[in-house]
Amino acid sequence: MAVSSPLLLLPKMDVDRQRVESALLRSIETRDAHLNELAAHLIFAGGKRLRPVMTVAAASVGRDKPVSDEVIQGAIACELVHLGSLYHDDVMDEATTRRGVETVNSRWGNLQAILAGDFLLAKASEIAAALGTEVAGLLARTIGHLCEGQIEELTKAFDVSRSVPSYLVSIEGKTASLFSTAARVGGLVAGHDRNIVEALTNYGAAYGMVFQIVDDILDVIATDVELGKRAGHDMEEGVYTLPVLLTLKSDSPDSLELRDLLGRPFMGNDRETALAIVRANSGVANAIETASEYVAIAEAECAKLPKSEATTALLAAPRALLDSVVR
Image (cartoon, rainbow, N blue to C red):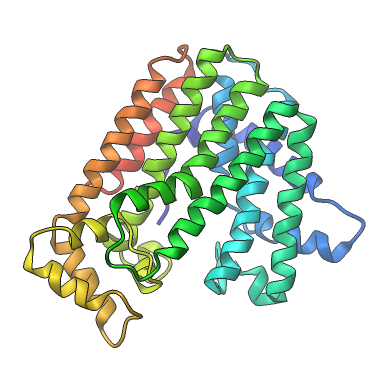
C-alpha cells in the first residue's frame, strides 16, 4: 500500500532522485554482464528511494543550493545496503515477487541472489570508504545492526510469548538503523555542525521506527488489494508484530483465541480469523499510540534544525506516515 511522503514533494527532489538513479546504475557496473543484470534487477523494478531521499533532505536543511555529488554518493551507499538486504531477505522468505517483478532468487536461484546481495553490500562499502573513515565505519556498523535486528526477529518466529521490547529492538536494527544512518550520512557529508548531525541522526531513527510500525499495522488492517499481497502475511510467516503482540497481551477473551491460532503455521481459515480478531481489538490502536510517541520524538529533533524547505518536509513526514493508519 503506497504511502506518500512529504519528502518526495520537495521542489528539488525530482532532480536529485534522478541523480540518485543514474549514480546507482553507474555504481554497480562491472565487466560481467550477468552480474550487472543481477545487481540492477531491483533497481530497474523501481522504488521510492526513501533512504537516499532522507540523505538528500538531511544534507539540505538550512540550505537552498543543490547537494554535492558526494552527498549523492552517500545516498546511493545507503540505498545499496537496503537493496542488498532485500536480496538476502527474499532468499530467507523464499519470496517469488518484489516490487511487482520476479525476485532474483526465484529467477536465478538462491546462490546467485546471495552473491548479488553481497556484491551490492560490497559496493556500498567501497563508496562509503571514499567518503571518509567516519562514514565507512558508520555504514559497516549499520550492516551489523541490520543483521542483529533480523536475527532477533528470526529467533522469535512463531513465539507467542515474544515481548514488545524484543519487537522494538528488532525493528530498531532492521529498519530504523538504516534511516538513521541515511540522515547522519547526509549531515556528515554536507558538513553540518555536530549538533545538527546528532539531531538528524535521532530524527532518522525515530522516523524509521514510525515507518516500520506503520508498515506492520497496515499488514493487518489493509486489504489484499491495498497491500498488493496477502494481508496478515507476517502472522502467516510467524512474525508477530506490534499490533498482534499488543492484542495477545490484552485482557480480551479474543486474545486467548488468537493465542490458540498462533504459534504454528496457519491452517484453513486461520489467517482470516486471526486478522478479524486483531482488527476488532485494541492492539491496533495501542500500536498507533506507540508510533505517535516516535512521531513526537522526530518532531522534537526537527525543532533543533535550521529552517528550510527540507526541514519543513522532514517535520511533516512522520506525521504523514501515522495519518495513513488513523481511520
